[in-house]
Image (cartoon, rainbow, N blue to C red; front, side):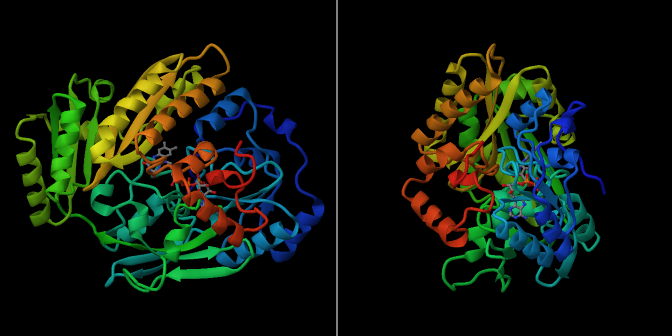
Length: 482
Ligand SMILES: Cc1cc2nc3c(=O)[nH]c(=O)nc-3n(C[C@H](O)[C@H](O)[C@H](O)COP(=O)(O)OP(=O)(O)OC[C@H]3O[C@@H](n4cnc5c(N)ncnc54)[C@H](O)[C@@H]3O)c2cc1C
């Protein structure tokens, strides 16, 4: 199946600017081990970008963000191993790529390096209906996974807004979250086992021996969120759930965002975890639903006895809120994956992006206020808004959207907006990212976000990838981020 790529096409003539590809000796080496590759300029241009807004802005100007020296397309773990061995022998960087739907520049292969297109690893290799697990290759896209396991009566329950665009390997490499994560968990909660190819070319198989173990630190989780910087994930085992036979919906409006957050907290802390619990501020409620007050969307699905109990807790907790018509939820479901307005805005010269962070309930109010104030104080900002997208017993994810129309270089405004919001979030005890990851965009903040922990990350990188071959520039590790 053909997958959609980035939303904006390169203008004609881009291929004429292509720098030379990797040396012929490298191509011969790939041919010798039988791994398919391409040095065709447009293919290289496509693999030199992802959905990071700065990448889209480059595309609009007809500038390829980076020109990988070659696009290599392995079809198995063994071919990934062979490709990595060839690349490292020739001193080339290796950037793992899935759907290239990342929004922080993590999948942009550095100029002259190897873009490792993993979408050829597209097989579902095993299904254990008794335990409820599925084993598969990293290049499988969400719809293909769900189609196969739905037919067997299961779902993984991971439905990011980029469901059509992203691969399982990309979900894992970024610690992604689906829109139903309150019930099914983030992807790190779903993974049970991994096969990873290291920079050395060694293939390691991790986990896969049941739901939990106590055999030292969790080596599976070491690679979940590593953004291609520690190794290439080639295979995974994920937990499945029975396909839900029952669903209930609710929509409410609340007087203000703080009241809505209190409502969400009380629902979660009464141990009710509706699959979807999303709270929009006034700006986003107006934009999405044409309603003046903050809108709370609730959906749960699964075992009827449990879903009814969860929704009973929701109704009780929300007794002071205004109940809205069910069509508000239907509207949300219908439009939830439509991001065309964002790319249209970029095309019209408006700088727009989203920033997702998380924090504990006790400080989320301060995080929200500080980040919105900081974004609005940046010259040329037109609007800054927020919704709460994923919620837990002890905290939640806040998802900010900002837009600005600078008269100067849009990249300066973009950087200033990210600096302002990120420092406000970190200063108030929030995390750097909840589910998009760090990529190249957030690399400059990682040291501050991790504190002393950054030395541990650096030591791990040094041990596993001493020559800094694996996706240099992401996670604040090695290489120029941009
Ligand atoms: C419109 C839109 C909506 C989005 N909504 C969501 C959302 O709801 N939730 C969410 O979590 N994210 C969302 N994203 C972000 C993005 O889709 C996710 O980060 C996704 O998981 C990336 O998967 P991918 O296959 O496209 O990875 P890519 O973009 O190709 O790569 C992302 C990073 O992972 C690394 N990587 C990819 N595959 C592997 C592998 N097999 N082994 C090692 N490293 C690898 C890359 O090197 C890169 O650093 C959205 C993006 C867009 C464009």
